[in-house]
Amino acid sequence: MSKFARFGFPRPRTAARAGAGVGAVAAVGLLACTAAWFHAVQDAPGNAEARAHSATDDRPAAVAAAADGRVARESRGNGQGLPGISERTRARIPAESLQLVLVTGRARNSSYATAALYTRPTVGADWVLAESWPARNGARGWSTERRYGDLTSPVGVFSLSDAGGLLPKPPGTRLPYDRSRAFTASGHGVEGESLEGSFDYVVAIDFNRKRGVSPLDPTKPEGARKGGNIWLHVDHDGPSQGCVGISKEAMERVLETLDPAAKPVIVMGPHGF
Image 1: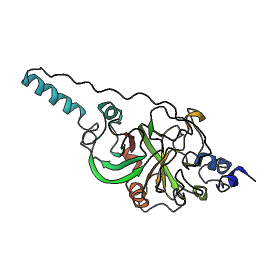
Image 2: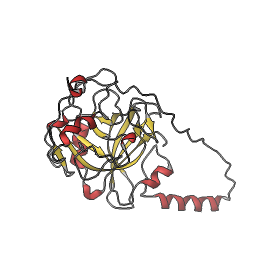
Image 3: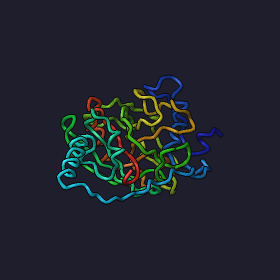
Image 4: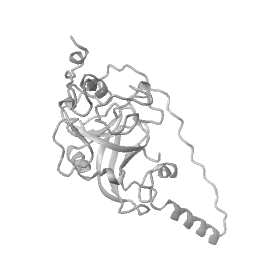
């Protein structure tokens, strides 16, 4: 019995964009998103939470107002209007990005989150909320030092370059889209839920992957130990091994909206990251 049949995964076919031979490794890459418990790994110790420090502001009122106004003007357009993220994270958002998916987890060790789609008309303008949806992330929450099989989602700011899925692309989709039967999801998730339909639509999150190729491509520029194939995909009513799941309707909306010319990114992590 092949290892794919053993764990309930279909024998993959060659994906059109990934080239000859990619289909044979595609199912291996999909393991990063499908939550099967054969990864018997322990949680890697995460970074300690940053401690909050408070200080009394004894600046003269006029000086304080001027300084605070300057800071507000400098940060305007580089995260302004995005709730639940730190100034450090705001500073990592590319100035040229005009579209953004913000995924905010309830807590560092939680698999529940909210995903929100933001846009802005021009560089330097404030971000405007378009829509938001419930989301699920890794079964063991979030990590800034993610490792393959640790069941966490990576924290950070990542570009969104490529999409694909089992179904035809929604009308208006502008991201490069690889439709392939290799996106067939089978088996069961971490909590025993069916994974069927999870990869009907996916957007690859550019974490440890080669851009400009199918989400199925197994290339991991920073090494296999870090894991990869982290996707925004259709929610299967359970936590993932590292991906972010939202409803099918939400995925359609994301695919209809994201435009490579707008340099879309995803900003993801626990509340306050």
